[in-house]
Image 1 (cartoon, one colour):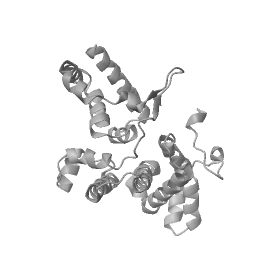
Image 2: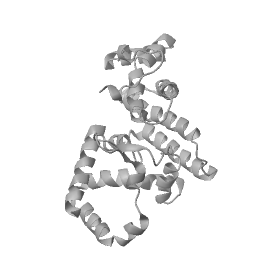
Image 3: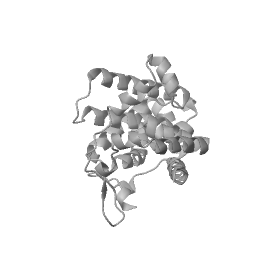
Image 4: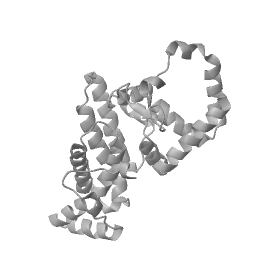
Length: 258
């Protein structure tokens, strides 16, 4: 499990306090009454939430100290705007704000130049998703985003993809103790792909045979481009469940295609 640990300079992450629900409610009552020390306790008592989110970025070429500081900014924004009347856990409200701050930081520091109009569209999508989540407690569908921003649904994924951190084709993606498989090994040959119509037909048939939830998750992951965490939040299940369903769906498709 050590490889999933996030190390932050100057902080012993094993000793960070985690607040109970009762402690959180009492601290918010004090904070809303003007007690700034209560706000500090709320921040310090939720730093592990920031660390848990950073685990998904731990394998990238990121400075984890920087991402932690940015994530804390998202946490502070969540605490400043949280209201006990939401009937939500602070973590539920804070996660999208923390993720949003981290993703914005990464996108603004990307090494690839992206068209300003596409970047502005992506930020508009993200801002609408955050606003919608804060209001309704769930993420909007692509259809709702499309209607709100007056854009075709396909542009949603394209805009968000344009802001993702670039990955080297020499990035190792698998190693079972033998030869390492790199990203370039998994890139499709478009000529070969277009000629292999039987495979595409089998894949389409397989998608129509697997369970509806499995198909939904595969489409969200590989067509829309959502992360497992984003899907988990939208479906109100854990990321581990999303991972398990995705893995089972892929195994089912492989058996059908063979």
